[in-house]
Each structure stands twice: as C-alpha cells, then as structure tokens.
Image (cartoon, rainbow, N blue to C red; front, side, top):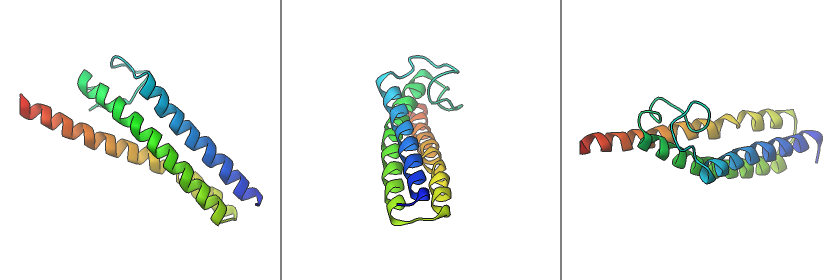
Length: 120
C-alpha cells in the first residue's frame, strides 16, 4: 500500500465518520425548534415546525446512510487503485453525499409541503 492509498483511506474514514456521527447526533438530539444555529436549515425546512422536524429527521437518516456508503466506496477505491489521482477522486467524492442529501431532503419536503397544502 503506497502513500496515496494510505492518504485516501484516512480521508475516507474521517469524512465518512464525520458524516455518520453528525447524522447520529441529529437523530439522537434533533433541534426542537427552528433556529439559525443547529439543524437542517433551508427556506423550505424553516417554513413550518412540521417541515423543520421532518427535514431534520429525514436528513439525519440520509447522513448516516450516505456516510456509510461514502466510506465503503472510498475503501474499495483505495484498495483497487493507486496514484496521485486517487486522493483527488476521493476528495472530489466528498461533495456527492452532501449534494444528494440536499436534493433528496428538499424533494421530500416539497412532496410533504404539497400534501399539506392539498389538505387545507
């Protein structure tokens, strides 16, 4: 195992762990009220307390899942490939779970918001 593979393993494990632990923290202790410090904060999630609660519940689940998937993919890539580009690819992949998290959570909130509007 060369230096780039070791660096990729370290990056993968740290980032995956950070994503998972953040998800576990939000799942275990979700923010109780809409605030500007802690929680999944977007215009849509802050529209109502119901959307806020659901955004934090849903995004926490995704963070745990995406953190594990990121770690697994990073570990596989680290063992299969080597070279200086490996670290760049692993680092570039950091944006994938966060982008998916936002897209999926916003889609979920939009559906919930539309459903609530229809019930009014």
